[in-house]
Each structure stands twice: as C-alpha cells, then as structure tokens.
Length: 359
Image 1: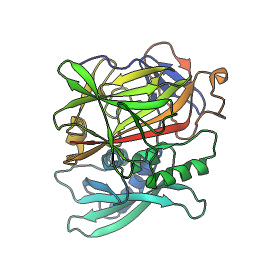
Image 2: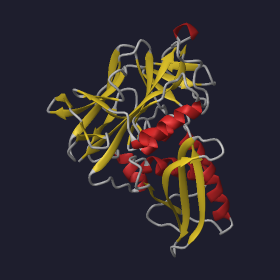
Image 3: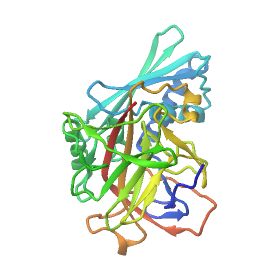
Image 4: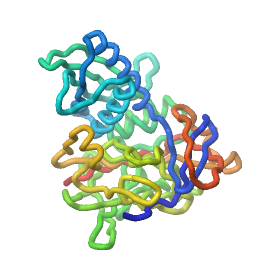
C-alpha cells in the first residue's frame, strides 16, 4: 500500500471550467457511459413488458479485425446503468442475459468513424428477444475500444480526427524507443511498463509485430506499474485504462484522469482506491471488484493497457497555441472534499497509446 499519485484532482462542473484538488485526477462521463445509459433504458422497457426479472451480463467481444479488448468496460458500464434503472444484475441466477459484440463503424451520412455495439437480450431458453445497436463516437473512447495507437492533432476538426483513427486501424502509429512506447519519435508523450522485481520496479521493453502492434510480456503473477511521461511544455491529462477499465473505476474518488505536469512523469502503481492506497496491477488482469461483480475471467494470454493524453491548462494564457478551446462535450458535475480548488481546462486527445500485454 503506497501513495502513488502526485497530480491534482480535476473535477468538472461546467463545459470549460474545472476544479483541481490534490491529489490530481479528473472526472468526466465518456461516450460509452452515455450510450450504455440509453441501452439500459431500452432494455428496461423490453423487460418491463415481460414482467421483469433478474439479469446477467455476458461477454461483449470485438470483431475479428479489431485489436481492442474493451469488453469488460462495456460490461461494467452496462451493469451500472441497468442498476440505475432498477433492474437486478445477478450473474448466478437470472432470467435474462444481455451479450453482444462491437466493431468499427463509419456513419454514411457524416463520414464519421466510430464504434457500433450490437447488444442482444436473451431469455433463459436462449431465445433472442431483441437486438439494440448503439453508436459511439469520440477521440478518447473509440481508440481505446478498438485498440488503436494514434495521434489526433487538436488543430484539425472532429471529422478528420475520426478519419485518422480509422486509418490507424490498418496502420497503427507506434514508436518504440528503449523502454518507452509512443505514437511517434517526435511525440512528447509516452508510457513505460514497469514490472516489480523484489522491492524495485524495472522498466520492460516492448516488442512490435508485423502489423505494428506493440506488446510487452507480463507473467500471470507479476505486479506492474505504468509510467506516464509528459515531455511537452504544458500539463497533460491522461486517461489510463486496463482492458478498457479506467484506473479509477473502483475508487472512492470517482475520477477519470491523471494530471502529469509539464516535463515530468508519473508512476501509477495500480487501481486507485483512495488518496493513499491502490490495488496493484497484475498480469492476471482485472482487479478483484470487477471479477467479483461480473464473474469476469481474463483472457488466458492477452490484455490491453491504454493511455490517452490531452493538454491541460489553468487559463487562456497557458493554453497551447494549437488548441482552439477546451474539450466540452461529456463532462459532468462533481464535488469533493480536499485541498483548495483552482480552475482548469482540458483540450482534445492528442495521443492514444495502446500496448498489449502477453501473459
């Protein structure tokens, strides 16, 4: 048990203003949460017509041409949304099950690229009662779900950013320099996978396959940490996720991002619990609360670590020149007891770094 974060906690209470409290992180409602809320409402109406009943949440798998492994995140977000509607989620005894798959999707009307999740509600006899497709867009959620390492410059428009994500499906943007994993040699953002060796943490080099995907080996019982590196001239807000599940998912502090000051790095040793404790990341995959909630069983060989970097600044004098304004859509209201608050703004996602770990 150790204190492991040194950035300020950012809590959004409006589109452009944020509050930072020590320790540093950020709360934001992402596109997946919004769509799972809508899906839960559709399911609630369907089950209401059938007299109600308990629910199990089955696996959500990626299409065969998708490299991501965010099914556990879909399960957790949907479970939370179903409970808010009043439905009981019970993986042991249930009357209905919801399962599904997800894939990359281009909207014909707009040309925007995103993710389509197709969910199926099944009764106890295995009969499919209904299918519910949901579309997800967004520079932060889509690369994570699809397992895409990509640079998305804030100076280009949203449509062009989504096209860059689509292009990266065929040609991921990955650069390995020593033990650092980045999207390009010129990028100021990178991560390192640090594996515990006795009382020390040792950086482990990644490898790259023929399709430019990056891998690092982590044995089943090894404990590891993730170093977030920000060599830019401005602070960075980083969404760090394991198998799509945000590192704050099971924290008493319901936040989303780590804040890494300019020209510095931050070592994240595990799933955040509170201001002074964490559960270490392990090669076995999910943290115990996730496994207990949904009876999740990690893949026997593959997992995914993702880090999405955005610029962060306190006022317009500190805004990067290539950032027209702060990112607004999707941020909710949060309050927290802590240190004196200050204002903060967050820009568009600049780099999404994905690395698979092989057990």
